[in-house]
Length: 118
Image (cartoon, rainbow, N blue to C red; front, top):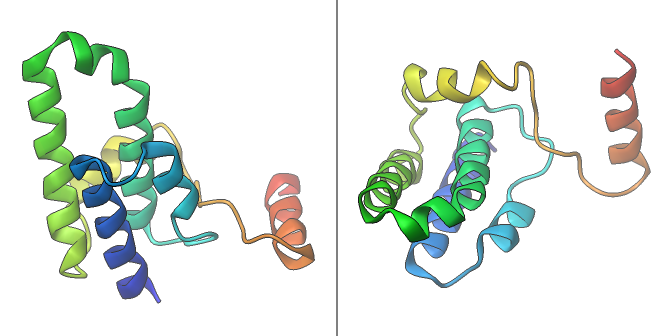
């Protein structure tokens, strides 16, 4: 499943970069409950992309660098490969042990509750 999820993430990132999809919509479409560190890092990279929207508007160089960074993440994920450790560590240091939200429904709710309790 991770291979499919990595490719889905790459397509979502490329959709955002090309303007086909807004960032929030792409984030909502990320695979739920995935424990793949590459998928989680890509999710957080996209969160930072959205959070930096004001800075991106003011600083063309920053926008270009951030676009290239996300494009490189998408290029790696589309091939199904794991992201380099340094990229994973960039986000994992702030969100240790983070997984994406669980799927909707009772099973997803219960898994989220267990993760919160432990």
